[in-house]
Length: 125
Image (cartoon, rainbow, N blue to C red; front, side, top):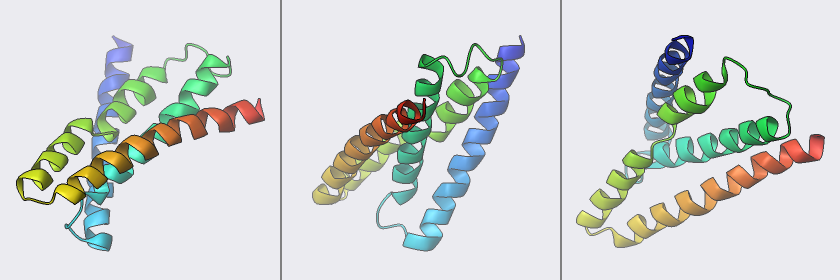
């Protein structure tokens, strides 16, 4: 039962972080591109790469807070469904180049951040 509570608490934290980051990106960069979704996906990908490497190298064992971070916070922070919706809406608006840019940036940057996170941990171990 404790793991369920950690996931729920992490989900609340991750959702609030996602909302705050998205609002900040709108304030800083405007609404003409889904920067908030891109930022949370890239940051979440980096964090999950670091966390996975720490776990796989044995630096973080089966800690009770693992579900809080991996499922709760990161599950609510990263927003693949929002990414998909943003992309479809851009395409429906005829902004095909922006839709393709959104797909390309999310795919490349998120994969790169997972690798970077894993490599940072591996180089320090």
